[in-house]
Length: 296
Image (tube, rainbow, N blue to C red; front, top):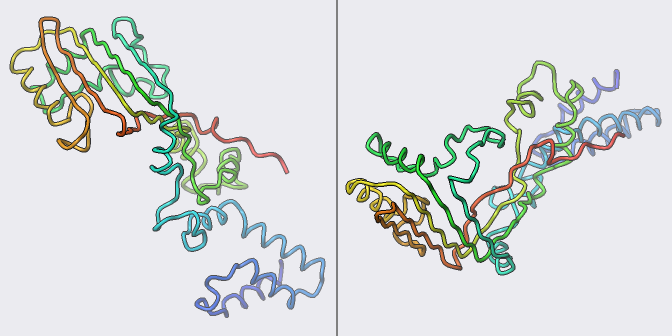
């Protein structure tokens, strides 16, 4: 803009922020340029350059994330996501039945090639009794014994979550596939590596949620539990703390029963129809989730 930039800056500083706070800066600039840049071609170039800066990746993202500027993207100040709980409930009757059977003796214990890369620990570490050192023997006993898991689900639904207008996937694609300083300012933080790099904060995305309704689960553990251990385990189960934690506590509609015999321990957990649960998610890499933008 050359000398015109100084004139524009002077004009901009003279505006009343209260009167013009909600006006689009690009519209203000275009109106100012109409009367202050005489050469039509130069005026057109300046307006185009201003819009390019004003509507760049960062400004667009800031506008999208501002509830005042993007009211349809938010509800009570919270970003909108779909489907809603009501949508889940209406879709669940169309869910398909599913059965899962797992035997620790025949299932692979190698989880090094999973996206968690083994950081979750032992494959059966979801059997965690908690409560300090006195539980460590029970934990170890379960994790090193033959564990069988049998789950029957009456309705299973895979649902892709969809963010509202506050989320701009095209801007994410541009940021993801543009590593140079045309977008990421040199020496700034965050930078491309800190966001999308090998140790970045945005390496993965949830591409779908798995919702189940009508669950019947049986877990058997072939191990010998002492009487004191049995009482502790049954107490945890009665409060809904083990093996499947339930936030609703004693008022839950599901049942959780633990029994012991000469063969070991059997856990029977039933969550009847009408009590849907999100039981998992499909996780994909960010680079696989977003498409590379087409060149201009």
